[in-house]
Image (cartoon, rainbow, N blue to C red):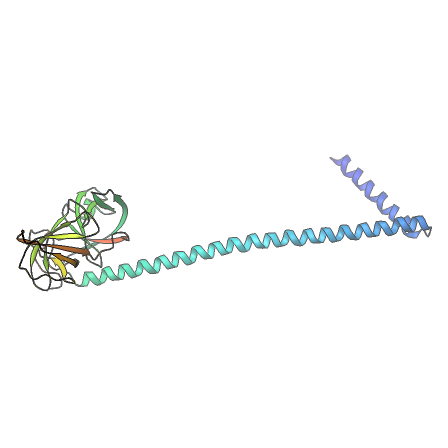
Length: 263
């Protein structure tokens, strides 16, 4: 390695000596060689300068691209935090209207089965959750717990074939049993043919059955059908909860659910 360096040093000395001799020689051929060498040297310097600028620009572009990606991630993180804050504030608003202890929970998984629709939440027996505990969010009734693990629970949502809830039309106090219709709506069963039910009526939990407290919003009546051969109306209800966007929910922990929400 040392010999190689000495050789390169000797070559450099020879080159500089040659250039010195060429610079002092006034012969025409030597001047032509000198002019050509100067031209080549200038071109080489220009190419080297362009390469250096291009390399510098590439590094700057890479750095700016990385910084831009980090800024986009930060913006997304702040936006998500702001939206989550809004949802949690709405849940706190719901808490102020109910006398029952609310346990906040996050939805960690969905079951997309066409007949059995459920969610998995990140609280369980260790947090005081029990089977049949109601689950709500700021919009209204989400469902009820049907399986409890130590640190998780599974919840039948309103849009599930296994879900039932005693419900009442808020305006006229007409009672019925709410179940899933198999589509995007629920059906309020056992509503007498002469009962006062109209499109736009709000349907809430009635408190009958001892599982759900009174007054939790379930949905809005979107269709009322009558059959002359039947003793009951067919009442379709659109749930107020958007089950495609569930992220935070709350579990009602109290076993005494006979009081009306908000009283």
